[in-house]
Image (cartoon, rainbow, N blue to C red):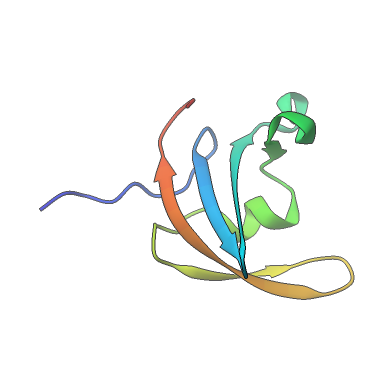
Length: 79
């Protein structure tokens, strides 16, 4: 049995939000750079993803609304 990778700081995560699929790397706040698909581990999206695995559907609690995304896959470390 292959163990699934759990989302952690340093992971690159591909998520689906409706018809949109995007990849994000979760990093320390000092390394965050949204233009290069690097989000802080304290961002709304990252906080929702941390600790989950591919196939999980998670609720993202934003500052004005919430939405759900599905984790398509997780890559440990830098991609």
